[in-house]
Length: 418
Image 1: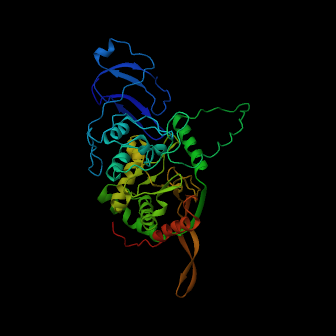
Image 2 (image 1 turned 180 degrees about the vertical axis):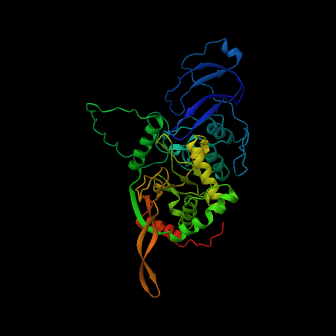
Image 3 (image 1 turned 45 degrees about the horizontal axis):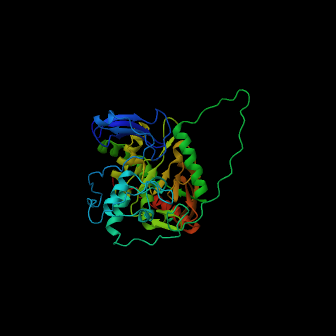
């Protein structure tokens, strides 16, 4: 096989993708079968040269440290330095004292840059489950200042020094009692995606104390504006104009004004995210759920937001999203109004701390205040539901945030240009 040739397809709860061969060679051994559930870091195959194929590999022998990859510049233009005086002669362990797994790429960068395992443990990872990604370590290296945080503590029984003290993990949740099927009941095995969604939702409820605030918004001006411009917008841009990009614009504006809802939690440390990456929950034809992410949503205008929303929604239904397009979210929006629901109490998408549900827009009688007195009129109303993590977002901030989103939508001008 050639380098970068796809050798296996992996499937997660979010997206399926191909894994390329890291180097040219021969597939010597398959260690897993089609359909197997593989743990992170578990070897799946052995690749070697033609000479290796003539010698049977020793069983259970630890693999040699992988060759360092070619330097790759990150988004800030920083390129990891090749092995130098800063490089460590000791390979970084795959798993730290905290239980975090470090990928071969991260370990190689750490070795070449002289970043110790103890120092790696102090980096706040943005990957799944807090894992340190390539971007995390490349962003960390220019700012390390040559000082390694003091994380030393008494050695454990194995001789390894644990990472900085962290709060004790919560007690294991009680297991639900088994449910017995009755005569004539149909048993349906959850598919892989549904199982992983279920585990993620349960984990979120155990991680974050959820609080939900509700606001009803009068979006009459918004509805009238969309009715007026949607045909011209479609003719000019070749895209349909839905309410979703407008909701996104309002939420992004509110995040810019109240950035403490755009945070994550690591123990007792609050990570205030610089980027505003808004996830949009999308239902799949299979009935499962996926959350594509609009990266740097604050840099888009209304037209750009509409195009991005439509593109991600379309490719989500077709199963054509890339792994990077379903990761890195800092806030999530779910439109329960799509199904005719007036409101909902959404579950936070970890490791985020807040999520908003937008309900169906309905015509309702409402009191209209005028200089001549109050009147009863027909208005377009909708509910906004804001669920937030009470560890770091209190009712005052959570409530003000959803109220601010409603105010932005209510103030939408019928003359807003497209």
